[in-house]
Image 1 (cartoon, rainbow, N blue to C red):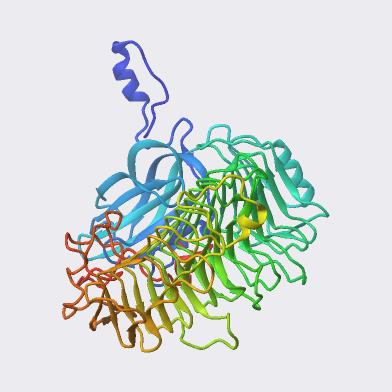
Image 2 (image 1 turned 45 degrees about the vertical axis):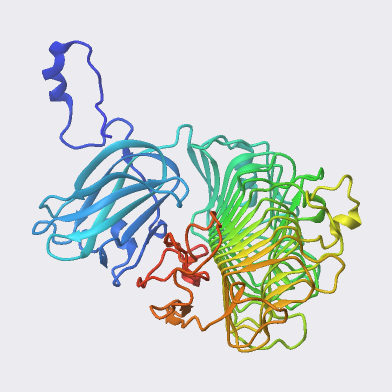
Amino acid sequence: MIRQTKRFSVLACTCLLLTLVPDAPGYAADAKLPFPASAVTASKDDGNVPANAVDGNLATRWSANGDGEWIKFDLGANKKVSYLKMAFLNGDSRTSKFDIQTSTDNVSFKTVKANVTSSLNAGLQTFDFPDVNAARYVRIIGHGNSANAWNSYTEVEIYGEGAEGGQGVPVSSSAELTAAISKAVPGTTIVLADGTYTQDAPFVVSGKNGTANSPITIKAANPGQAVISGGASLKIQKSSYVTIEGLKFTNTGNTALLLDGSNNIQVTRNRFALPATGKELFWLQVSGANSHHNQIDHNDFGPKSDTGPLIAYEGDGKGNISQYDVIEYNYFHDVGPWVDNGKETIRLGLSKVSLSNGYNTIQYNLFENCDGEPEIVSVKSSGNTVRYNTFKTSKGGLTSRHGHNNEFYGNFFLGDGVEPEKKGMEQSGIRVYGNDHKIYNNYFEKLTGTAIYLDSGSFDGGTGGYPPNPTIDQLRAHWKIYRAQVVNNTIVGSKAGIVIGSGKAYAPQDSVVANNIVKNSTGTLYNEAATSNTVFEGNLGYGSTLSNKSRTASEIRNADPLFQTVNGLQKLSSASKAAIDTAVGTYSYIKEDMDGEVRSSAHDIGADEYSTASSFKNRPLQKADVGPNAP
């Protein structure tokens, strides 16, 4: 909000006050906030790129056609944002309409001024709104202009203040980086110039605590051009509210980034590309006591050939895993060659922390050509959620290897149908062990392995799941499944559908398989490899052997779902009478389908709720949707 420079307590001075207020804003501490052109992104452009909006030239512009197209500005750290100045193409002959939004995390945006309409003026115009005391991102959502649907901004300026206590500290050498870290206080932003930063030991951030509104930030001046190399790495210990942004890690011999006993750490828009050493190496590790609410987002991980996970959660040494962390919008790619064990892309825990609740979320990540081992994502803790991820042409699958009460929903598993060169290297879906897991609204296509596998166990942890004093060997075992729910999934064109049990001692117990669609041309669609009391209801199967057990039509019905192809996926059509409104049972946690659309009161069978829409909130992710350059 535009501020007055003085306050007067005497009413008689009102007239004098009015003479002191300038016509233009920007007095007192409000000033134009600096940020590089590389910090400006947009939903799309027509060749008039986003950087044109901050080049100081009214003859250039950013342009995009369509209601809802946006341009976004990254201020580099939380700042107070007071108002904007904007100029528009042909602004003297037509008005433009738009919304102004702000965000601290680039995920949740708040509209601070809606349905703003410009005046007829070709120069910079001021748009004021109530001060936002903490905003790192400013987004302008265009709604076209009075002549057409084009959004064309020739210049945008953002005014406000830096975060309280904030200071920018430019560094260009390893010694300067070390010194700047040692002096950092809440609000400090350490900006690394282009170049290589190396030494024989980690750069250590220890006992440094920012705040939610004034984090300590270590960032590259130009994303990907500040390189942590050689024997160096980055260690954050016993710290909080620290942001690591835009760095590139190419170091050798050490974990690139270690979060040790720290919380509210954001690791965003970095590139992890460590060279091969032939030895086991974790790229990013989270461990230690008091670890919680960390965020790993919009990073690039790969290629990786060494053994060891790209991201490893190790626990605190006392049986507890970091809690309430989020891993999202990352690009994981080109992991291999294959090993039988030890090259997970994400390992969320260990057997020794498997009975602790993490409440962690892995979402909106793209895993492409991740061919390291059978478990691309290995969940080894409890109470976590894995949702809305895309696994594309990757050998292995998503496994709840240890732990209880994990949820897996809205994920896309897209294979290529090409058989592996040896057994065990199949493109697979979801496999679980333990108690009370939920698997729903997932989509599987052209997998060369099993889409959903409720395996038998080699150890019975009991219906409660918490036996007294389990041994290390028992914790490492495959635990018997109790009460798994496999509901409303779609499997098409894959080698194997849903498999229940194996040759291990303890078959799944009290589990449910309901309202799924399996349409394959090979194998047994619903394969009960072990005898169990699993309840089947409302399932459809078509194209191959329905079941190897005697099941009624109310349990598994042989009917063609009559899919149609929508955006490359096999989805329900208006002819899908066998599936539309025919789901049975009550599964109250299923409120949406795989697309993020609300399910009708009578649910459809499978992951998709029939719709005539052609664009959806949730969909298979592409490379442009994730990683450092994504919106």
